[in-house]
Image: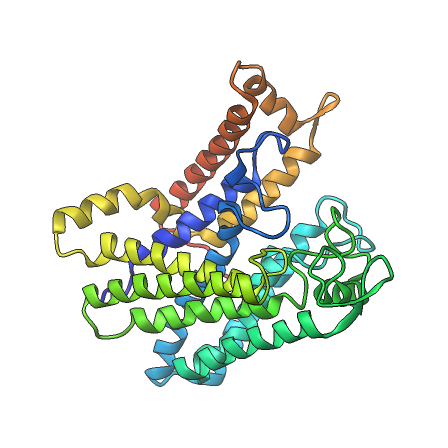
Length: 376
């Protein structure tokens, strides 16, 4: 197997490009359904994007940490280096949240990068010290513990009423813990719960462990065809498990990162990565493989500087809202010609998002051509 898999970079790049697309519409009031998060229970394409990135991060950890540990690298050093990387990602996320208000009293503590960093910190020793069986046991244990805490522990909701097992916004165990530890520092739109809160990071770690396990399967000496079929079968089983958990345990819910959500998103990740792996790295037909690689090259460009492009896009998005052009924001000024173009509002909003992605593809291509790969 090649040291650098095109499929791994392309899948990571697809995830980052999708993040940029769904995070930067021209008008939040005009969105196609799949480009908005589900209001609560349920899912859309947008809800799949973040767990895909967590999953692919787990895969990359196996391909690097587990392999290096098996070759005899110092395990403690590998673990501490990766934990440090996770801590830096958390700090970058906090710094992004600090802009533009620059107010510690209202700083949102949770966030996408904070969750990704915490998952990396927790998963690092698992990747280094445990085999796939131990990792799977920890992942299942985390999902079981989370289920018990969410369904069996009585908590006081944001309305002051004590309930057990409620999964409505602001009434669940996760939101109660977030309010107890981070009151005043939660997502501004909800104030009483946070989609990247502390307790729901436990099942998010399970999503990263699913990626670790996928990485183990990818690294086996089995044939490319066997590995591809394995990804497809695992994806289908996980989708089935997600539906069972949705009916029996807790519904699919991105904000709560329920076990059903973990299984379903890991299932789709296995299916998509399996297809990517076959087309870009494993197909015996050279012409097919090279053609697929040409088509996927923009995704590889995004994937090679994924974290840097995500952070930069967040900064630019904040500047577009903060910088004023007359009485309007810079974003409103840039969007105005599209809004007045005669396009349907949802299409104008989507076009703005596509142009935003295109700009950052240009940035990524500039870095890629110069072989500048920004790492944490």
